Image (spheres, helix red, strand yellow):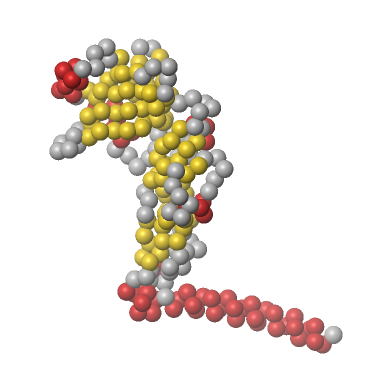
Length: 215
């Protein structure tokens, strides 16, 4: 998984006045949990652009007072009106300690049901999973090519031994729904494909049957 480096400054004072002064200076108050003790620090708001305003998932290397702390973003608070970042929580990574984070979902292929006039619906843009740092994927790839109208892909369909999804197995990731075009006759394309497959199989089997009878 890609990593982003954040240059921070340790916070000695964590009171409301100190926090307000940081925000006025366009600095973001942050805290890292998971170590021997929480580490409070601040960093320039622009330093988080590549971490927060992106669909990609990243780990973070936080550099404070000459030390580098590997971490992942756990929680972020925005101003309700301006959307400015108010506070960020991180969790320190350990090689053998599982961590929970959200990873983007990437859809590939063109569903058979969409070709037949259906509409692809995606329920999750990101999925929450649990894994040790070395097994954290950059993304979850879901191939929708086989999906016909009415078909769905569930969490249970994409299980992986490297990580555990924090969603029930019956949660729907994506599905192909019926549309007006499909109802008007587009769905018949799926039936035609199936009939062609059956006919081809029957034609291929006929000579073999005749040879067997001749023997």
